[in-house]
Length: 140
Image (cartoon, rainbow, N blue to C red; front, top):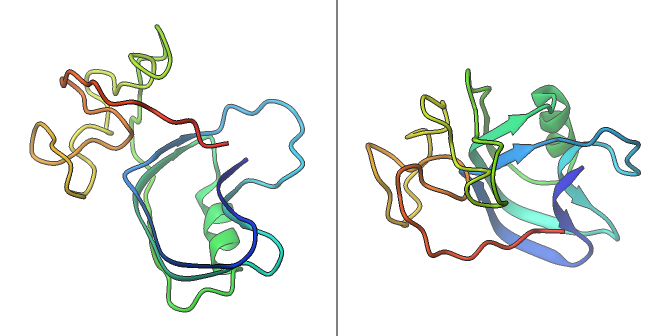
């Protein structure tokens, strides 16, 4: 499972913040679990990975996969949240991926300039308690 794929060329100022990443893969995957996958001599400069929740993924492996990339001085903070629960029922993406009541995803994000409820944004695409008309894109 790869979250971000860079398949050639140069990518500058790549920010990965406040994402909910759930590995639900139960079968063989051609790619190892990597937060960032590069091919064809792709380069990344100024990488920031902050306040992301990874479920069913080994943070050590993710960190090793990032640090194995030729990126000068990446800013990385991977934390394991105690209860990153989502509703897991209903239509996808909403309400399926909405943080459940009491989830550690609530108010655990960084302010990246979008409106939010509570003391801080929630981790993930949806803000708990908010009515959203936002469209979602699946990253393939």
